[in-house]
Image (cartoon, rainbow, N blue to C red):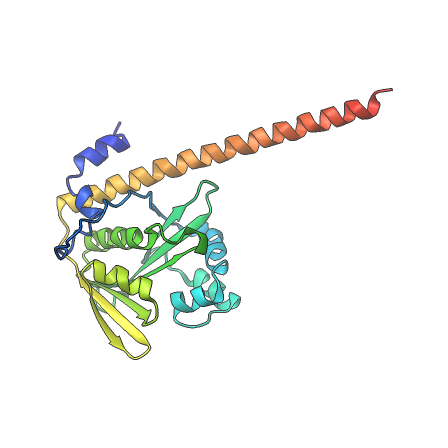
Length: 242
């Protein structure tokens, strides 16, 4: 049986995934610290409620940056309901309570349009900012899009969305500003054996992480229920005592 460790060793390209594999970085005077590997899990249609909860928790300004307009609750819910999980890909980062704290949406072009293009969108909960989750999700999206045969990844963002544009520039994307909006595009290399093995390893790693968090959550819930029973028994005994 293949373990996460075996798959990670088999994937020669996994390290390059963590370092934005598509473009050579410009030389820097001071080397940046190595990026932290974050479990990023594929999101399926059964998790629409989690997606909605994550997006509805965003502040009005964060919604404005994510969607390009001040999205009301009804508009957010319509977006969630319209997600096409058969065509597009969604990825998420979860905390220990299995709350979705960061999410990426890779929207592939419809069949009647250019099939070698895709668009990237991301959102990160306010309390999870500053951990590099946006960059990790972008790199994960690049691997997925590359393996799907995408040659160009686009990012449409408001020009004031400095965090998103910084992620794009750091990955080597070309950013073109047009007034209040900006568009970044990144040329992707063709898929290789290493890139495909990287995706398999990353999926397995995220699946194991999610399973462990699920079991831990169940354990703590069970422990909490036992404590409630014990507390109830003590209270009953104290009331029945003469």
